[in-house]
Image (cartoon, rainbow, N blue to C red; front, top):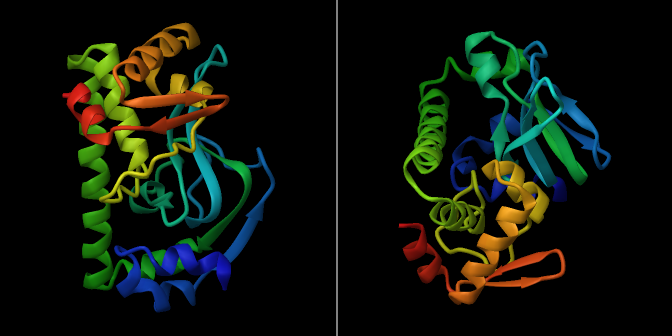
Length: 220
């Protein structure tokens, strides 16, 4: 039951919990284990219960781009179930991870319920807003502002988007560089400038938010 706590306490999911949780099962993944790959056929609808899932894609030359790190309470994988197309990204466990899996047949049945379908539409609308923001950042903002905005996004849980930002960010500099398409050298320089400004504190394998309001201003 403890693995399901993050799902039951997710405000978006609270009104849907009983029916959906009765239809699925918990699946445990080892660190680095791949749940599915980009191009795979549609399968289950998933949620992160414990640990994290890295959503990423890899180019033909082997370069990896991290799209998001999904934390407990986040649902994913519905795109293929809605349009019948292949998976749009790789999904890989970050550390020891537990996911909740809802079979495609159950998902299709839930979609016949207007309450569920409306809730899912709201969830996807929120993700689309976030995606538009990331695209806008990549095309219109300088590197430092892009970095500040992505850190602010991660401080609020990335896809979860909590109202209050947390202090410690659960992301490595390597993963952050992949998210932004930056070299490690460029990322290190820009993080150092944000730290000098008083927005961050950098430690060994750690990034801490010192002043969230300042970080937001630097992103603007």
